[in-house]
Amino acid sequence: MPTAIIVIESGVIQLSHTAKNTIIADPQIVDHHSYGQTGLALRLTEFFTDIYVRKSYMILQQLQGPDHVVILGDLMDGGREWDDIQWLDELHRFQTLFRNRDPRNRRVHIMAGNHDIGIGNTVVDAALARFRLHVGATNQLLDVAGHRLVLLDTLTLESDSAHVNASSRALVERLRGEREPRAPRVLFSHVPLRRPPHTDCGPLRQSPEPVPDRRGYQFRDQLQANTTAYVLNAIMPQVVFSGDDHDTCTVAHTLSNGRSAVEHTIGAFGWASGVPIASYALLALQADPLELALQHCFLPYQLGIYKCYAAAFVCSLLVAAACCRRRSEDCCGAEPGLIAALPPRKPQAAGPHCIKRVALVMRDVAAVAVPTYIACILYFYIV
Image (cartoon, rainbow, N blue to C red; front, side, top):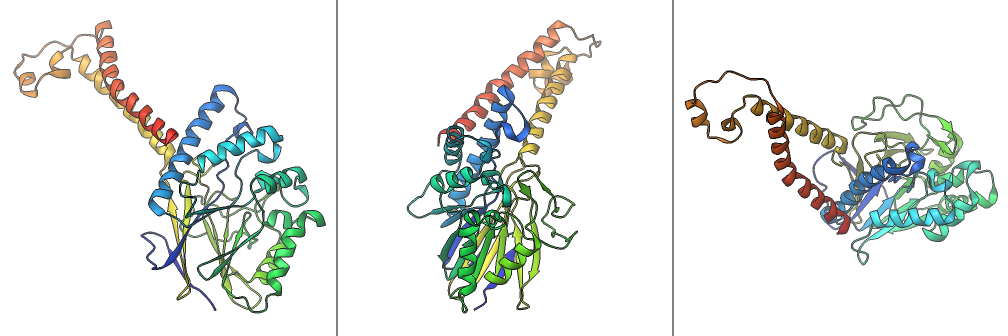
């Protein structure tokens, strides 16, 4: 039975008796593999990107209250490169940022990404085994609100090695063998499916360019054409969700039975992923009647916030300097009526006393702003 699909670009999903699901793509927590940083620069980058992710995920859980969270892979930037000790440290860091605050009522399902295990014939066997041991199965089937969620490991599916792709192929063949699917299927893949070149991604995409089709060391922007056809025609999904691209994209695929399945690529969850505004998606599933509602959600523009901080600091300096240039205490502290009553004075060149006054004004501003900022950061780090 087909599902009624509702896509909401803005506003609030309003379906009664729904299972609320949050879809997060590419957390890809920053490490020295990200930008080649070391020392203090790396620590500062990690600190400010981590606090953003932690705060966003905490508030997301509070406001949305999802029943299920699906993370589409790429937990860490250099996950496949780490040795076991380093990887476990980074996994602990990831788990701290993405702490489930309601484990009794919320389930979190984590997929593998190419940054975690590699892709195709370059899958790192040790990284794959480690991921399955400490995180969980890379292929999962979930029955949620009358829908079957298929979390398919398309990374190993593209491998020519039987021992690598066995689990993924077995899942696809199992679903192909169900002649009459008992529930509409929702497919999740880390890597986007193949589409014609220059396919438009819709109005929510931040980049003017479509999803590219490049290949390089341990990455592939799109699945191969034969893998895409195999997966779509075997699973026959109602809708597809993917990540990896770091930006939003919506494209329709035609299935062998003539029906279309819309693929939604979800933007990255972090603000240092090459896309200005981080995002995630809300997926509401309803069993009776069968309905599916999707809403793309965008997080605060963190780099823009830092730019505002810098602009406010510069403006504060300019205002303080302008006041002190007039060399009048009234300008910086007296009532406006008193300023008007004073006789005009001949402007004098700014001297050390003006610089000192500017410093005093900025000190007073910082005495309030800096502790407040630190308190806010500590709150999100401790809570």
